[in-house]
Amino acid sequence: MQPKRIIASSLTAWTLLLFGSSFVMAEPIQQKTEHEVAATVNGRPIYSHQIKPDVDRALGRHKKYGASTVSEGVRQQIQKGELDKHIEMELLVQAGEKISDSKLEKKVDEMVAANMTGKDTGTPEGKLKEKEYRQQARRTLLVEGYLATRGLQELRVPEADLRKFYEGNPRNFLLPESVKVSHILITLARKAAPEEIALAKEQSEKIWKEVLQGAKSFEELATKYSVGESAKKGGDLGYINPNFMPAEFEKVAFALKTGEVSEPVQTRHGFHIIKSYDKKPARIQEFAEVKGFLERFLLKKYQETRRAEIGRELRTKAKVEILLNTMS
Image (cartoon, rainbow, N blue to C red; front, top):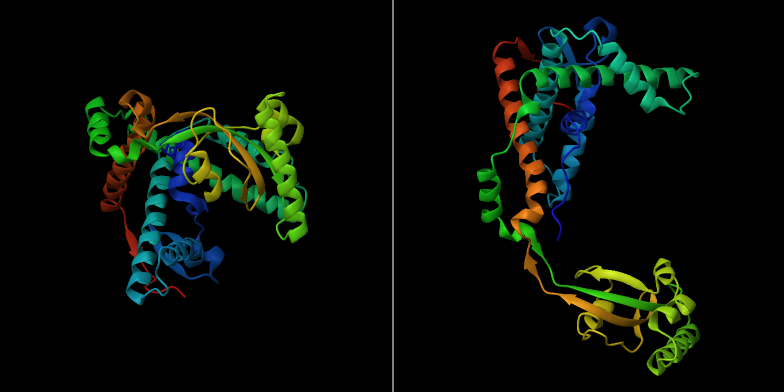
């Protein structure tokens, strides 16, 4: 399996991924007296309604991974974690505000223009969305600018660390057995009647016999008879890994010898005539193959660690007051 590419391509994208919806601009208390204040950071409020969507998402993830109910203790822990993220975000924004950047507003305008292109900003709703995005963009850039001054963009991962991670996690770089196949597919409706199934089977068997006769190549017959995008490529599906195709298909495909053609195989999609072209055994990817991924993956971890250190440092110098103990 190829390592999953989870690293943002730029510091801005990484910052958005890290903080998500917490980019809503903090508001003066007097402008939102109808909202409960969850915390203040150097006198600037963070409201409970800003935290709640993140808490709800975190609770949803918790339930998704097996918890049918969430205890009050766990709920409070999740709420505290999400509130801490918003507090950290606000600390970074405020730190960014202390840095002079004459091009900040121009950068904000560019981000807004790129995001709002083609959207109706003439209506009250459109103007509100543009205003909200402008606030989010400004906060993003303030955080990005501040973190840049703290050296996050200069962080590098030593090759020794890359090799240590690679050698300590071989299962992460396992490529499973794969087989290169083509197929000719005669489709069936999801709830096909018995007579429709019999007709499709008969058609696939005639095509199979035509393949065996060899008057035309498998690719020609796939182009002529098969259904789906692969038909345009002579039935080529490329290399497939386990769990890529229906179990009935894979059982036959992985059992075929190179060059062999199967009898029609029925799956939920219809009847397949499968031809095997090549096999690759399971193997561990070489370090050189995954080095680039590891650099991006571990760099993100390094940045997260450093950002957390900076956040803790800023918090020790700030006046942070937690006002909300529970959130309905």
